Length: 137
Image (cartoon, rainbow, N blue to C red; front, side, top):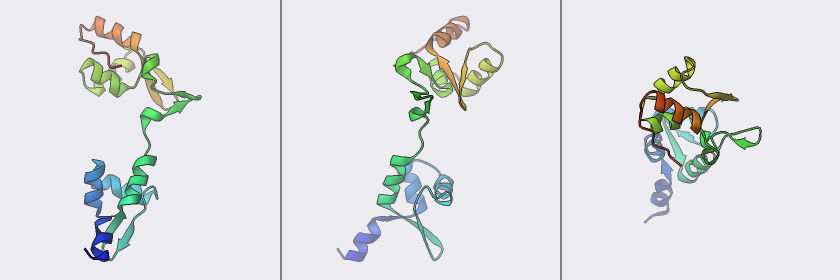
């Protein structure tokens, strides 16, 4: 195998990078434009080195790792869950959880920019609404 072919195997197109990361092509473009993902434009095509994509994946923002005042924002071991996690546990759409918090049917607390729901409040809401509650620990 020639050195050029081997080097090309390490270079990815935006479509390939999107497929590997399980995101849209637009998400890859945005990461490049925000200088979060290194890429080179060769004539009309962007190329991304496989190592740069891996580095981006390691540094990618994750809400699950977010902290507020030094503590994990959604520390499931302490009974704190995100809106998405709550919706999944109750088997309802995310928008239903947002609506329930807005009309005070479900207690939620603001921590920074995120809504945090405590497991006790989820159980109480599920009982009131006769919803099966699947605790995800």
